[in-house]
Length: 126
Image (cartoon, rainbow, N blue to C red; front, side, top):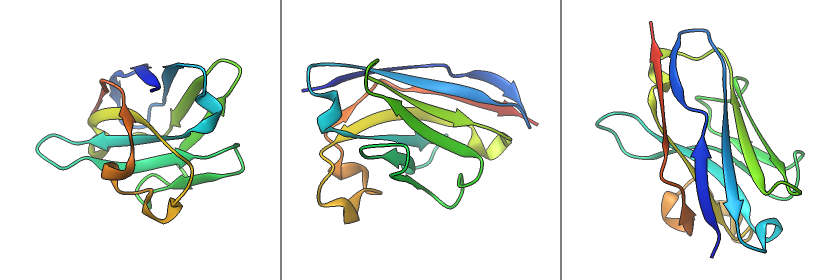
């Protein structure tokens, strides 16, 4: 089972950028699709972005499309989330997740993801 550790969160101002990182351990990183979810205060966990085999195979929620970019470095077993033009509504705990890259129609449902990191807090002030 892959294990995931996020880093890169922090307190920023509206309009700023951050790069979140998720380091994976285990021998089969390339067998997994990787994703980022987020959980705003008092709300349910929601899908933000996912990547399957390459940077050409990415998926985004409507709320982050055009501002967030997901990428992966298979040699470093790391997935990144570049978050630009941050808004106060982006304030959330951001979680990295992994799952098999098949049965892909359900990728926005957190229940279908099989491994999770502990989360990293992103707070955006107005």
